[in-house]
Image 1 (cartoon, one colour):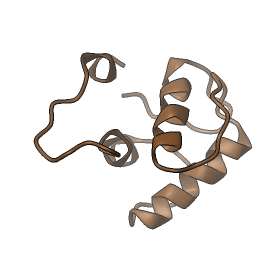
Image 2: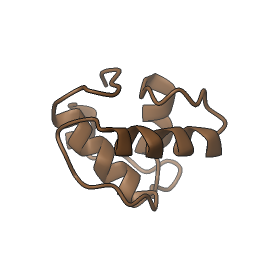
Image 3: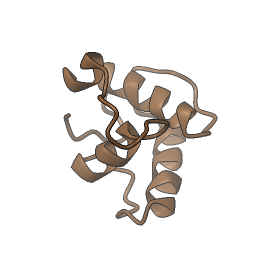
Image 4: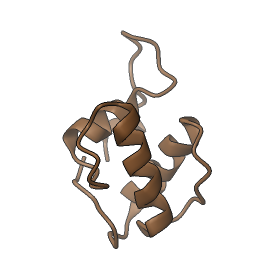
Length: 82
């Protein structure tokens, strides 16, 4: 997964928004990484003991990808291809 941050535009942001919604955040699905998305990411990062910088890199993606998945469950191929 790419590292993304405020202002980034692409499919990864749509996927990020969907993951945040699964995690209980009220963010609108968008292709643009907005301040609303950044604020939700920072809150998520704080709650998961990650660097709360609003930048979604490897460790943040890892935590986000496993929201709502059981340990050992295989992730959908769509996720792995991003």
